[in-house]
Image 1 (cartoon, rainbow, N blue to C red):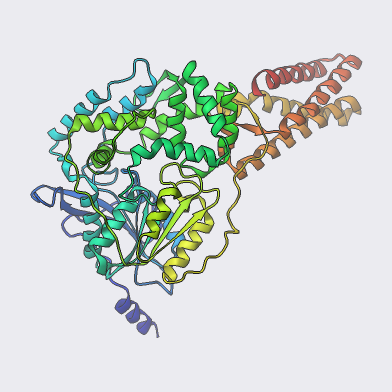
Image 2 (cartoon, rainbow, N blue to C red):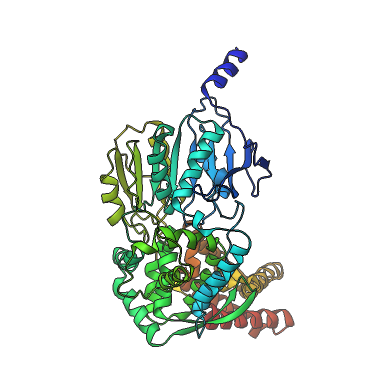
Length: 567
């Protein structure tokens, strides 16, 4: 019996092999069991194939008894977003299929890696005054890469798609299911057109059609998203206020490891929000954040400024700009000039690099296609992805409420529907989403203190000291029969417990909400803390020994910290 099962698997499931030319390698990130990493060796330019490069990939082999013969091949977007770190997540999403995660050539886990710290630093330098010279930084990066033998002309969508086709043949799969997100939806559509016999189905999450002029649409997309969120007027008021009087925010340059003072205008905040709204949890708190910024709560600029630096170390900007300069920038007019510094920055880099314009492609496929879009997506909005999906001969489109960019990462319902689609690509019935959690945090009291505490936990020391003093006060008062002291300690512990419970509930719903504030109920609980301090003071009037003096001083100091800094 066991022999027949093994024989059946051997006949129905194609073998997974590793490139003999490039060979296996240790996985660069943590991987689930039965995962092998390797390099695919390919020409840097297929029209001049002498120089070879290596494309990183990982293969997770399913252990399911009903393992399907056709795996899922996944690539992240960007351009230049890494893919390998999602192998474990995807293996849980598709337990009955092999999962192949493939990197883009020139990316973090490929060789060579087209990092460009010069332009990344200059992009962050747009928040300095005077702003950094992006064109000069781009020329320095290009010259350094050229000295390493890199030909930037080989890093474009056409070549990346050809790598995916070559990988299927290398691994020996007869066909597989393509899974692209954002930029890589373009790659996967090119793969489907170039390798129709090797494609069983296609999943396009946050579809970016090749016909879309993304840079020209960027400001409209952002305006549409703020309108959908119901905060367009507040957003316009915020940008106007900060354009008239930019704020100064101290943040850290992750590339240099030094702090600097960023000068943040309204247009800068608009640029940062256009990126931040990719995340569904940010979209959920955006109405509260934008409304607060419109009325002068500049303390909320701190997490936004910090996010710029973090974003600049998440991509390999040499690869990013090589793709954009060939496949996107030339197809945009940039009229009128954008107020978004990322748009103008990319244009400046491409003008410095002078890479050739790619040939326009109108890729299509007859394979079944499932296109997902998020309600609040500011980059690949359903306004453009839906009609593009409807133009495909065998596609269906679905919009997900409360979702933003890369729907599958935040929506359990989206993940379930993708799996259902792969199980039966011809199935057309739509089931409602009942398993997605609403990440809207409810009423928030705006304060920058929780975010500061998340960066420096010692700032919460007064809260911890108050809770500890109340615990000691409760125990000592109970043992000694001093009711006022005991009730003072009990009230303080009740306050600390209720605040902790409220904050925990907020984190469970949407951790990002702490960048905006705390639940409104926390303000109401302040009266319990005040009652604790009053009872402690009353106990001190009856018995002026040092334990009561210490408890009263700690309570008064805590309330001063709570009102003057935390709230």
